[in-house]
Length: 112
Length: 113
Image 1: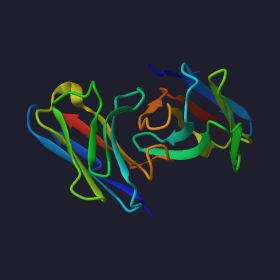
Image 2: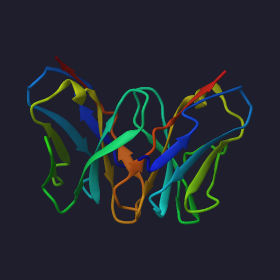
Image 3: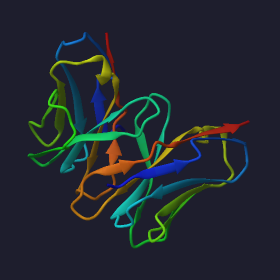
């Protein structure tokens, strides 16, 4: 039973065309995170929400935005994808800021 | 700034062997450490979480240890199986109130039948 669900699993977008990735959770966790993982690299935190409070990492490009309309859903918006944004995007949740993190299956983004 | 290193980057062992994966971190002021498994093209599956006050955690054939003062953790896998083949990542959460998990690049494990 999937607890953190990411859609779609694979996304192909054109250079410069806005794209949205989605994440939903059935765990009722307070915190939701978005990570970017490039090939053979460590996942890198882009931002997180604690409830409705948005926290952006200092080095996250302005091109990346996020929305959390309710507890269950969180979206990653890439306003103008570049070739360098091709990566696996991972959504995660945790009950508290220091609890066990649960990850979704990821969305593989390809930019053409 | 916290940095997490995992050595080796890749490891190949015959089925049935016991093995140890290593993780080191530069800042010992961590809140907890979590080990994950990642299959190719997939997300991360949580294996074990160790609080900073703990020395080890066990789940089935997996045992994770933590030596916070020396900045090290190990993941011990007993009686390895081909199904254990995956990339194993460790991640540390630095200090209460810090929501960021800092990851290592992982160790890619291949268990040969």
